[in-house]
Image 1 (cartoon, helix red, strand yellow):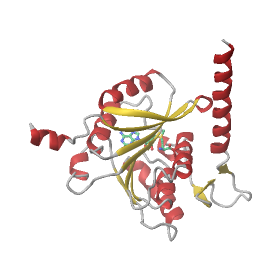
Image 2 (image 1 turned 180 degrees about the vertical axis):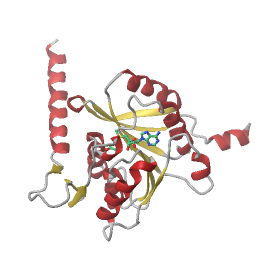
Image 3 (image 1 turned 135 degrees about the horizontal axis):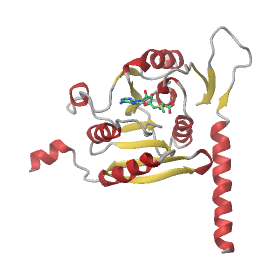
Length: 243
Ligand SMILES: C[S@@+](CC[C@H](N)C(=O)[O-])C[C@H]1O[C@@H](n2cnc3c(N)ncnc32)[C@H](O)[C@@H]1O
């Protein structure tokens, strides 16, 4: 009994410390200028993010900070230098920006309405700072993914996603998009905010197709970070060819 309480206390302390370190990445501008922005510190650089409150994708969600913190503090093990990366549901672009600063060749994707603000944030924070200029482009989950990202020319080392699972009606399409883009050697790094039941059942269904490893558990933020990779370790094309 006492042992389990000590373990609980220890994991609560780890959670609190990690959550504090992640949240400390954010700062507010000291002077109010003509344009509103939120500040973040990653890779020893100041990142300025413009938000707008009318769209989900125009607000920065804490899961993005969790994923960025992980990428920066684990850059030896998950080295993004020269890696091909795609971000799904990039929103205001923090994950795209940080992975570009860490040397990745990033394709940043989201719904058409979100792309203007996303492109603005990405360009403003990566110009003359990155090895590769990130590409910002439309990807509506489940729609024309094969035409837009043919496997013959698009092979990703990492798929990054922050807070893309919530009670929207496109969870099946999102699952299929992960499935299509995740090839044999692709790793998915996915920060997930738990709110309601649909999120839990998505994880259960996700586990039918992918192996999952929990990298962070942050109950104080209701966020978990996962690494995932294909169970079959064979792309559909190879499977079809072998059949
Ligand atoms: C909760 S926001 C998270 C944004 C960003 N990743 C972050 O953590 O700050 C969810 C993102 O998913 C995008 N999204 C929602 N439905 C989508 C769909 N059907 N296809 C592509 N993107 C979608 C939204 O536009 C939004 O940017």
